[in-house]
Image (cartoon, rainbow, N blue to C red; front, side, top):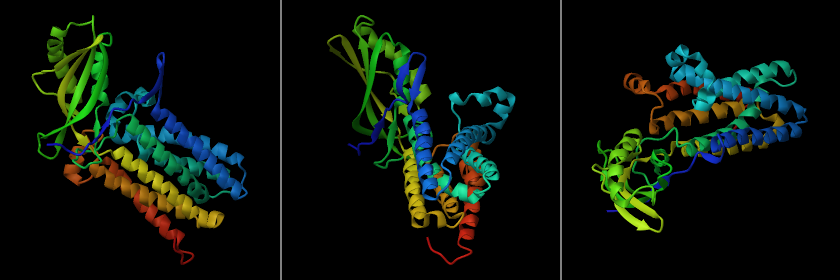
Length: 365
């Protein structure tokens, strides 16, 4: 039997490798979010007759607040004991670990500090305009998460599911880079029930390309029998290999192709869901602002941002894998994970601010 063709996601997180330094999609998209946001904010300030140079100051505040807030949020919310034992690890941002809730809190604090100095711009005035750009930045950052194959969704049989196979690809390539020239993967249309029978696993062909002269044809099967199980142990949440390993070996030119029939978990592309939602929110906020521009009631955009973004975040958490182990216990005891728990106060504050923005006049959006 065949199944819908899922999206086999094998994108590299790196754009280019320059010696020991690599330029990654996540970094470019993160920076791009701030650069585009700055141009949008300059346009808004120009329309409203504000000093455009203020945007440079705001951008610096937001950049520092996002990085510091997101990093501290991850450390405090998801692994406080580990980071308290090794506080120096908090500074190792390059190793990953940023929490969007922490970033949001950082932006709120930074905006407050900025508005105290900018006497002609109230807190709600500034934050109303900042959240337009934050929504767009959130879209790009979640695309960066997709390029990193991180923040993955739970298994699903929906046709929009992704097969996250890049980790498996990279581990196989790294076994012996001198011997293994390339690894190629594609769906083969087969399926089997998963171990818990919640989803069907998608069949994939893992084509491992060996260089002739580095290994002989008769040794390939034995080599794979010893090495692939260790790969499967590290990537079993994405790809499952059969045992014993019985590859189909073909000889072409200066290469041997060893094809292994394996299976991959179809998963919700939760990063893409959040990215598209943030993009839609960006256009909604831009539309609401464009109707009255400088006369937009204070708190209107901020309230909409908080209610919509974090309500959707709460919902999407049901489709995402837990980020840390203790969240499974949280769900069992309280019915929510850490991401959902942290979203609740943002939604409640957003509702209050949004209702307040309608208080003076009986308006509709």
